[in-house]
Length: 215
Ligand SMILES: Oc1cc(-c2ccc(F)cc2)cc2cncnc12
Ligand SMILES: [Mg+2]
Image (cartoon, rainbow, N blue to C red):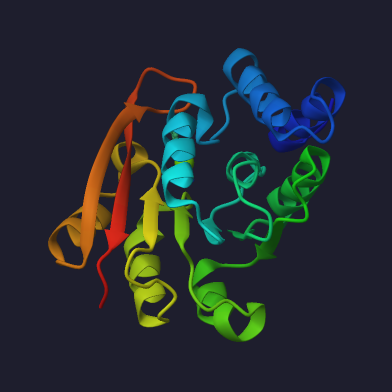
């Protein structure tokens, strides 16, 4: 029995999902985490909203804050057009190691790059170190206390331009009240609220979409 929850999830996927099939990987993570052990993936219900926003945005460059086991990176990457790429930031090296294997197993490794470190250090290095000009879509799913600071950092680093889409998980539970206040009142975003439920639970949660109108 693998020591860590994240390793048990990866083991289950490797033994039961279809290698090279990202939908199968996503479905099996959902199956394990709804039947065996809860884990903090965005999940199937909020995942369908994520899918819809990714499809309507059709992004070329995606930034994800909070990789965890790679569930949402796999979920997003399966929808990306050829030539597009997803950069995902994870500060926990053990989770990054699991996510790397998950993404590899799903067969989306050519689209996904895992950046190990903290967002406050990595975001300012995206242009110089990772050759990013602008990000079209940002999935914010790390510590809710960092949502507002990292959003401001993306603006200051000129990584988001008019039309860039932010989508934030957990704006109800655990909650991101200052983020909601910021994007809804600063005047630079068009916001949409998507009520849903916490992953693998009947507790209420929601996603917030914030489309940047420009500086
Ligand atoms: O989706 C999420 C859920 C929870 C969480 C925590 C405590 C609890 F009781 C329930 C849920 C934590 C998260 C941290 N980072 C990113 N996403 C998360
Ligand atoms: Mg989350």
